[in-house]
Length: 250
Image (cartoon, rainbow, N blue to C red; front, side, top):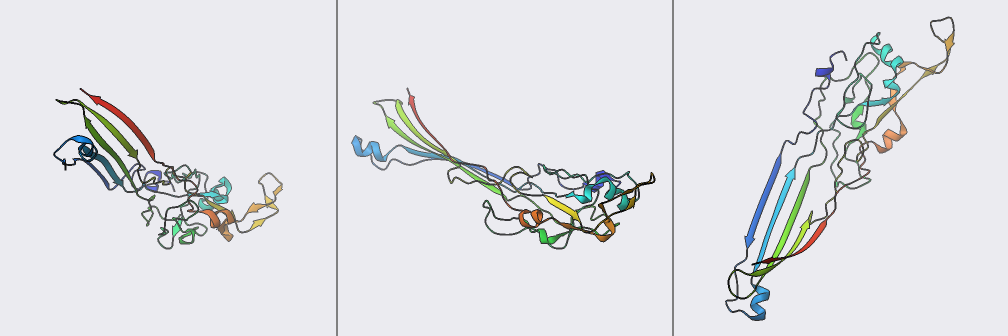
């Protein structure tokens, strides 16, 4: 807990281990040699698009709640000079104690609002005096994402030469895919902790006592909110955009 650089060791928050981008453009051959209405409808079609796929961003998690209180932290280490664990998402943590992993928390299944992508049962809270792993044994990422942008062109010739009118139909994110985006907002990553035992009559150091003080030696547990909602997708982002255009070439 006193080595924040190595304590937060891992891949960078913006890392995308695998990225694939494919662009394409194809002009269909003219199937009818003669002009006329039929030729105008069948000939002159063209399609282009961009398809991309990227692996998800890294996820790191940290505790909130009773384990992050200054008194508990000092009780764990015997000194107030501890450094909080840094997580790569919007969920803040002041804890120098990191989660213990008992199994791989990544769940399969569809990425829909209300579904869970992480299993809180694979995570635990270190016993009193233990810090948890310095480097997470589990490589956790957000769901991967893909995107398809496609544009269809229809060219209508205008007399002789290169004059033509081009009709364009473009669909960006054509399959209307929505995925969770912002860490800590679109997926519930709160590991909220609560003290198992609280005691009264604890000396305060100035001749008095204080009640309702956490006894860290009796351990901690996750709150009901965390047990119910951790790893759940609460919001997805992304929608289809359709564009129509008419262009004159002369």
